Image (cartoon, rainbow, N blue to C red; front, top):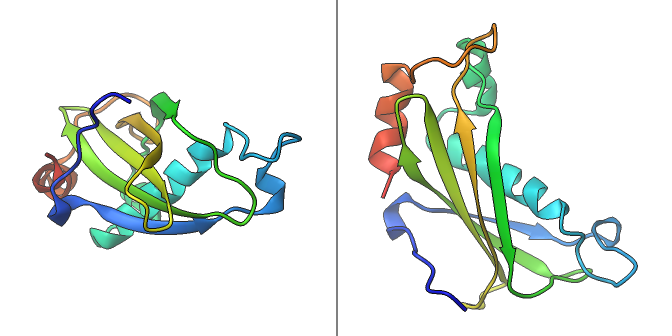
Length: 144
């Protein structure tokens, strides 16, 4: 397994997800597309932890469309597994930011899935825009 970079503890959030039967495929494992839902759950929790729920971002006239999503599957999750999802912001640029994720079974230290998502900042007309200072100031200290 390649070496995975971990975030500083202070800037990481942890959330949990119990695998539902509907998340699994005919092989009895979590369908690969569901991991991106787990990533989204973690992003939402991360923003709440910063005191800025995504609904507030939208109320201020911004959207954060996904421009890139990547996942590497080291091992499967199955029905009723308890997934520990760790998420952190690893990069903040002029008009985008990146979240990184690591998924573990319970308290295990073995990464089963690693991934990242890259998000642009757009206005209500869906035009790319510079991250406003209020958001940049909130996200920037959280980066590695």
